[in-house]
Each structure stands twice: as structure tokens, then as C-alpha cells.
Length: 108
View 1 (cartoon, rainbow, N blue to C red):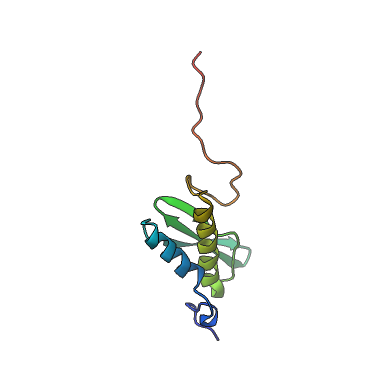
View 2 (view 1 turned 60 degrees about the horizontal axis):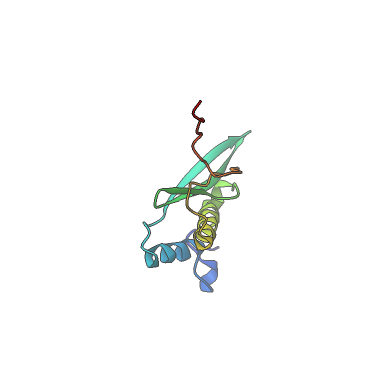
């Protein structure tokens, strides 16, 4: 059975390792992972967020408790892809459709 920190049998770096390396090479703060839970009926679903330089990025999916590392991997993948595309200029929240902009009222 693979360990929770396994990176696909050593064939390639984990998403978490790749994200750490990207942040290091681009002089960004180190990623900080946070595990979140949601009680669903008689079970609990688990997911992860990762914060990089003040930007909070959520994993796409929810997982059973024994797969918490998969939640971290999911969040790391989403974050790395957003950083590479340059789309990490404002916080990204799961289910968010539009970037959060302050509401301005016109001068009347």
C-alpha cells in the first residue's frame, strides 16, 4: 500500500512537490495547505485549500478521509496550473464564477 506521502511510485514529482518548486523558483511564499471537512449525512467529506502569497485556492473535489493526501494533491494541481496561467491575481474560491471586485456606487 502506498504511503500517504507517495508520489506515484517515484515516477514523477507529486503536485505538491512541483508547486513547492515553482514557488521557490519564482520567489513566492511557500504553499500552506489547509484541510477542510464537510459533514454529509453519516460521513465526513474532506478537501483542501492551499494559500500562496495570500491567495487561497481550493481543490476541485471532496474525498473520503483515507484520501486526504489526494485532496492536497488536487489543491496543489489547481494552484500550480493557475500560477502558470497567471490567473492567480485574486483569491479563487470553489464555485466562484467571477473575480471578486469591490462594488462601487456611482456619484449621484
